[in-house]
Structures are given as C-alpha cells and as structure tokens.
Image 1 (tube, one colour):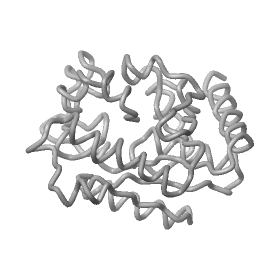
Image 2 (image 1 turned 180 degrees about the horizontal axis):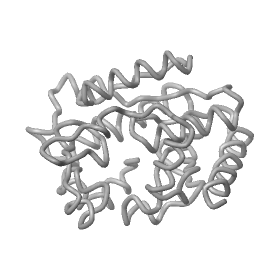
Image 3 (image 1 turned 45 degrees about the horizontal axis):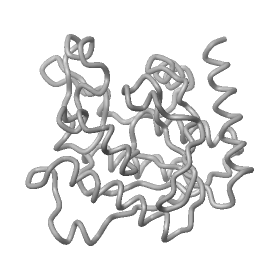
Length: 230
C-alpha cells in the first residue's frame, strides 16, 4: 500500500507539471532514480514523453552510455545529449580541477545553457529526500531565477528501498553497473567514473548510498546546490 501511495503521488505531480509548464523536460543520467522517473513519466503521460536530457560530461561509465543508448531505443524517444563544449575545449576535468569547478562547468553551466537554448520552463529531476541531507531541503516544486525555470521533484518521498522494490516488481531495466561486484563491493550510486566507486556493506551502513561518490564533492553539496547543481 505504501508503495502504491508513493506511485500515485508521483504520478499526480508529473501530471501537474505537464499542465503547468509549456516546455517541460526530464533529466536522465542512467541511474536508478532518474530511470524510475523516466518510467513513471511514461506511465503518467501515457508514453507521451517530454524532452529527455542527458548532460554529457564525457566522463560517464561506458556501461552507462550503452545502457542509455539501449533504453532510448527500447522506449523509443529522442534524447538530447548536451555538453558545455567551451569548458570541455578548455580541458575541464575531474583530475586537474577542483570538484566544485568541474561539476559547475560540466553539469550546472551545461544545464543552464541547455535551458536557455531550448527555452525549457520546467525540469523534472529524480532526487529523493533520504538520498543526502541537502536534498532534504528540496520541495516538489522549486523555482530558479538564473535562468528562470521551475524544478520538479516527483519522487522526493521515495526511499532507496522503495525505488528498488518498484524496479524489481515491474522488471524495469536498470544500469548493469548496479549488479557488478568488485572485491565484494558494489555500486550504490552511479555518476561520473572518476568520482564514483563501489562500496562495501560496512561502508554503505556508515555512509549511505552516496558513500561511493567523491567525498570532497559530497562535503560541498550545499554550495553546489546554491549554484544550481541538481
């Protein structure tokens, strides 16, 4: 019943977003949460999907890129691959620049450029309250001024367990990296490969699902959020 209630609430928010915004888009990174968002949006809008955006930092795992290619073909939608080409041409990368500069240039600035290019007024994200303390501050509808748009978070109320239960129950194809075991460690959260690593069960219990993300980036999430990071 709780899972059904979570589903119904998300469906309602997605449909409300569709009616409120003239040019809606959905952010998809190939992880479990944004894939759940993609599936729920298909359900809510009867396969009439809005624009789907993948921010291409060029540092996604090979498996993530292949998974995204397969799903976009399987579910028959066009995907907007967007890059901050100016930053990439300058050699911005996670090794020679700080995490905050790299994320800001290749994700936040890229997203803002994408919004301006396509004139999106609403963006849906697959983030959850229990994922990170900073995410606990988010609302279902959250306005941003530069550039002007509304961010929509339809699965805020889902737990990590809810996400996996739903994915397994309805056989939603997910990124195969989640099933890869490396020295008894698994990926709990998937981002760019230089900043993502598998973690042990002990690390997971201590640090949570984002324990495999770069710790220095996790410590500056508040600042990144203020700059417009997802």
